[in-house]
Amino acid sequence: MKITLKGKKLKNSRESLFIEYYNGSLIDESGKRKHRRSFEYLNLYLDHSSKERKLQNQNKENLELAHNILSIRKSEHLQGKYKIANTRKKNTNFLEYYTKLKEERFESKGNYDNWDAAGLHLERYCPSHYTFEDVNEDFVRGFRRYLDQTAETKSHTRLSQNTKHTYYNKFKACLRRAFEENFLDKDLRKAAKSFEMAESNREYLTMDELEKLARTYCKYLQLKNAFLVSCLSGLRWSDIDKLKWYEVRDEPNGCKVNFRQQKTKGMEYLPISQQSRDLMGIRRGEFDKVFKGLKYSATYNAELLKWCIRAGIPKHITFHSARHTNALLLLTMGADIYTVSKRLGHRELRTTEIYAKIIDEKMKEAAELIPELNISNNG
Image (cartoon, rainbow, N blue to C red; front, side):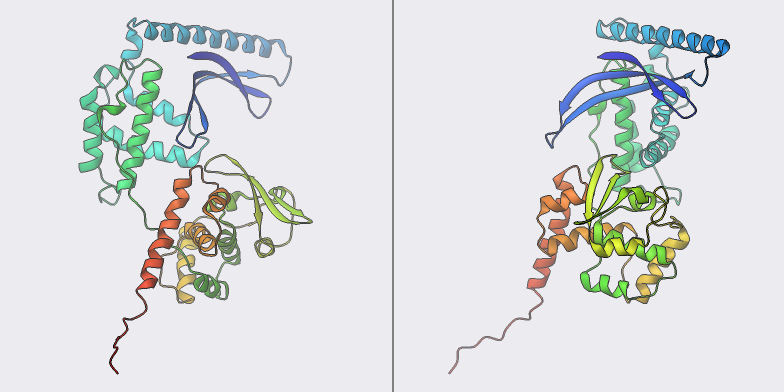
């Protein structure tokens, strides 16, 4: 493992110091190389706003302290490598360690929220005084059993299969990191089998339903336009919500949206139809939001359902249904699965294959729509 001190530039000419743990790379199931990195933020900063002596002295002290911590971390790594007992790490509080990992994910809201929700259940299961000395195979199996048989939502219902899968995976990620940083002598992730993902119901609109919706009144025009753009382009709510005009490129051969996906952080270059561009409206300032005033709220969600009811569509449609609609319409109209996968920004083809499976099921249902013939060969 390579352990190095690094800095991250912040606003106001400040720099946050952190330690990077680089544990090499591996090839994942899709054939892509993934680098295994983790970070420890030190809460130490360098201020480059002026050359004032007092500020420079403070920077020097913080940098020296950071280098001292780096030396300690390298020493701890060697202790683990050569099986030298590290009492300090063994006595580290497990829940505090989990919280530290959670806070490292603060910049990614969706991931942070999942770590936070999983942490609430971990707090209910794990005694507050537990250290890594207490974390063993029985502890791991016990938490899985708790999620499966005891854990409840805020409304006192049992956790769904996919929620259990998500929470347990955050717990396993914590165990992996703890093992890599020598808080654990043993990789405990295999002590209990992971939860399988359940196949979720992907509600979507047919082309006829989409046309009905387009002709129907919606109380909030920005909601209507944004939803239709999502149906036509496959853009996620999170990407439409933050979309700014500098990301929309009006070019002679058509319009493209060049943006970084909120969910995967991957850079995307997505051609969109002229109708999608028209629904975005008149271009404003480069850093203005395209769908100004759009917001995620109970009011907007309720209006989306009312809009569908007015259009005579008896389905529980959410904004994410627009993305499902785009995928299924493209596949139905003959687009190949690789193109659809690329347009949706899926990292793995198997994610897109779920939509192909839905189409296959609908084809089978359609085969049974024609009633049986009363066949006779009598003269």
